[in-house]
Length: 132
Image (cartoon, rainbow, N blue to C red; front, top):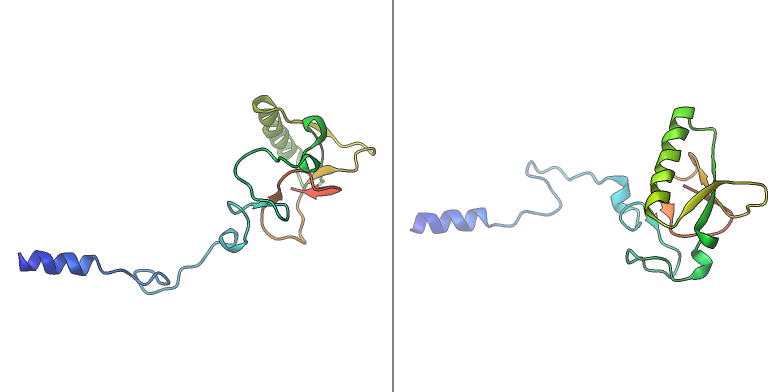
């Protein structure tokens, strides 16, 4: 009985949370320390996202229509895949996408922004070219 008590106390000893079993300090993925919601969502200043629609109408796309432009960073095959993803979003929500025209000041720019590391996006419409 004493042996079982000893074993239970040894196995229940907490580990140092800053090291692995082998003593190495774990590496964090960049998205884990970005301060982004769920690792890839930048919330508008002063807003808290609770998995719901944006209540601030200035952050919504008018009539649910999102103008977009896909940069030349993508192949034709990539563009087809992106468009298929947009089609699925359109099928399952009230959002629609349309290719940007010169009259569209606010739009989503789908491309590789080398000046901004990581893979993340802002919630809602923020104005101007919004890189995704």
